[in-house]
Amino acid sequence: MKMAKTQQVMVGGSSWGIRNIFHSLVAILTTLLLLTTTIYVRHDRGHLSPTINASSNSSFSSSFSSSSSSSSSSSKCDFFSGKWVFDNQSYPLYKEQQCSFMSDQLACEKFGRKDLSYQNWRWQPNHCDLPRFNATALLERLRNKRLVFVGDSLIRGQWVSMVCLVDSILPKTLKSMHSTANASLNIFKAKEYKASIEHYWSPLLVESNSDDPVNHKVVERTVRVKAIEKHAKYWTDADFLVFNTYLWWRRPVMNVLWGSFGDPDGVYKGVEMLRVYEMALRTWSDWLEVHVNRNKTRLFFVSMSPTHERAEEWGAGKGNNCYNETDMIAEEGYWGKGSDPKMMRVVENVLDDLKERGLNVQMLNITQLSEYRKEGHPSIYRKQWNSLTQEQIANPKSYADCIHWCLPGVPDVWNELLYAYIFYQ
Image (cartoon, rainbow, N blue to C red; front, top):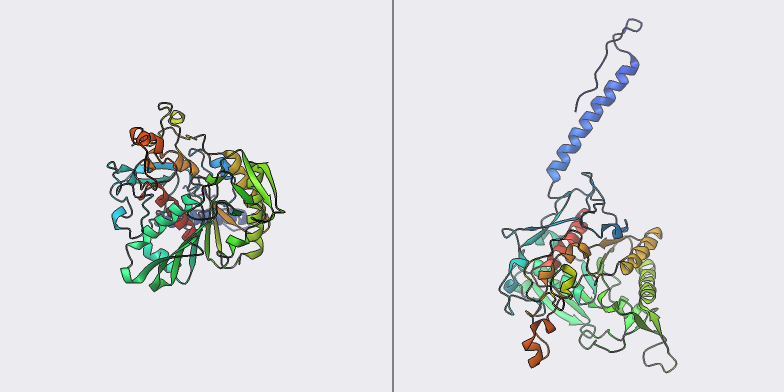
């Protein structure tokens, strides 16, 4: 930067005018400030200063496309706007077979997948770097604390990912896993740190007839949109709460119950899904406002996880899906029909209202970055809980899982984003 040019002026015997002295001092101070800021930002690159400023409710709907960045300044970063970079030197962050608590639903290599390049992709934001995940640092931050993931099987996969990310640094005798609350609550404990990383099964957040963690497939899905305490009592004293709810809402109409399950006087009514979704999220947000200790608990909401069940959406043959896919989608801003912007806007509005009431919930907008990863699903490479029919064996795409994600894989990046906010928000 050029320094402001000074002028010599004779005023009443003085060689400098007061006005020019002022201007010169301002220029000097500005230059020093810019130099200091540049040095600070360069020194912090890759570790992110606390000024990431990716606001929780700053219209994440405007980030649908990875090309739209909410910030271009060095003091701000839109983590969710970027690109995937192949990096087989640094990724995966752990080995599937070395994770003591890997889920057979997500262990794609174990169940026969040979192409493992899905494990080697790193998410690169456009204007900054994500901090490198440090398991020891995270456990130290979680010392004497609870990190609880609440929601469906997608966020359960994110929980498994987080457990695998820290598992390898802990001796066998200093870690444990157990279940409680009729197996709805699974708790991983790092004993030395007195830290727990937990998952609570609550696919619709509010009470429903799909609340059993094992037997939850029902023909008529029913929710009690005003009832949440049955679940929420298990979250109350958590230090970090990470929520999601989307997949189980994908139907035009939801059955709503006013009353209790088993109550003969209960009133059932079919209501348009989007309206019920909002009602449920309002119940959830009201509970947070009343019960969350704002001086203790950090809150996060994970946006919808995309599916890849219709190959024609990315230009492949109609009737196909993620089966046999080994490459990601290259089209910038690709958005599949399985991800519903209207539902995202409902979440946005609820979180905006909470913020106005003094409670901040950080959105982890993983939707767009995950949209590209059609090759990251288990497909047929997972444990099959039921015996396959001859028809299914003859047509593998008919039973391919294009909803969940292989591990190591995409959910590890979701946790890198969570890690960045836990440390640097």
